Image (tube, rainbow, N blue to C red; front, side, top):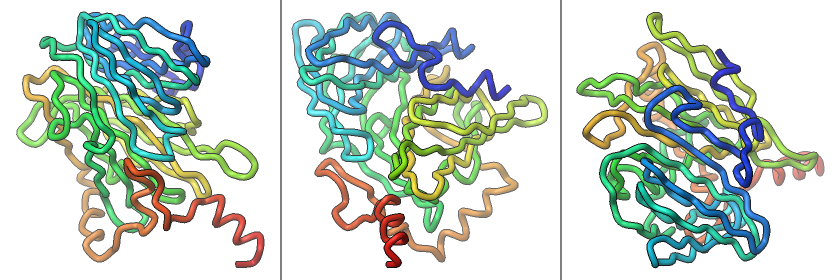
Length: 309
């Protein structure tokens, strides 16, 4: 089952897209993701069809034109440097994405019913939330969550996990429509920081219930995807020395656009231990203004260790 749900970087490449996950390829009904790569001066035409779609810079800046309007996205150097601005493109639309200097742009999407306006999301308006405590501390950039930005079906956020920490923990699920849970398909798109010797790795766990099995324990690298149709997911593990980024893309059949989860009862008790732990002082890794000037990276720690500090 791991092979079906762990999608290695480049394995779904099509034309200018380094990653293509559609509802059809994932075997579900709503959530999708493409990663667009543009060379300097290159443009790409994006047809949204029946899915509302975001243009989210991973690295680089771009312009997005749709219906006679244009938004300039300042973007960012990489996913570990700052919160980015983004654009919302409605269903049944044609947009042109152009990058003067080149870059990579995530296009999270969700099949939907309503056609909302073409809009710009300011980086300064993205709520930055710190969750967990101790080695379960992480940062969440809630750029397209229900309370932060209007969409019809799409829910999306970014999670930053400092090296040696665990996130998406305790393991949780959202695959049933109940009072405390929503039915949401989910895509995890990963990028992993680099160290002195090159790119790092991280790990993702997904496991099912007795009546809905799924079993994933994947070593993930930058550009990899894990699809989660159901089941408990977590932890996402950032190994020592390498910070971890992932983009969450969610959508489902419910009339209400909401994100409600249920912890695995075997591990939910861990949340109570956070009352006696502080937030990791490395967080936030960054805001819309740029990196946290007081934080120490894994590479910095390794350099100090090598120098006997």
